[in-house]
Length: 215
Image (cartoon, rainbow, N blue to C red; front, side, top):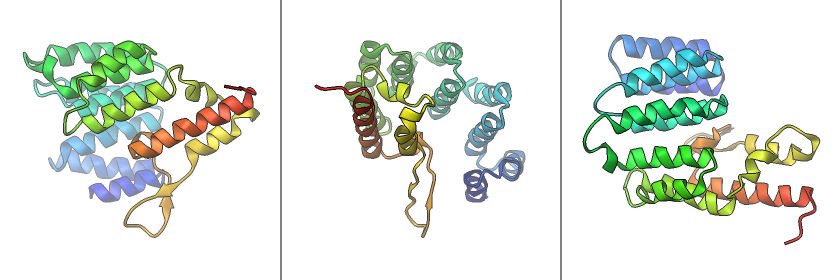
């Protein structure tokens, strides 16, 4: 049922996906996954406050779901309201005495610092998570992207303009989905680390060429 809901989301059939996720939550099946998907659906339906509410309920526990916090940071960033993330970070820090040692928390703090262009703080936090089995790969990927593009020129290149058509093509292209005979559009956050790094390098090349940059 979760797979069907994801398929509806991939096809932008948000109401069908919402119905299936609601049923999963109702019957206490895959509640965590379904709730995260519901929050994503709400956001994509421009129901921003409702989406944040779903994440808030998931984070309002002693056992903080750092995957939900990571997803929340990405969604709020897309809405241009990053300042609202800090209260969730503070809540996570106060959730337990061990929270300060949690790699997931360090990753999320590093991610927020990076999006706020505090690269030094971002590297410090991400470095605390880079050896963790669950968060290490993502942390290393974020650190490499910071070193490749410390000024986030790739983000600036995403602003709509004729000059940036090639950059938009990099962001919207489809990539193969293993196990399927066709390709599908995969959200940038779900791309493999190596592919995201390649994207950053490509965006930099396009940007430098557009401004006639000569190293």
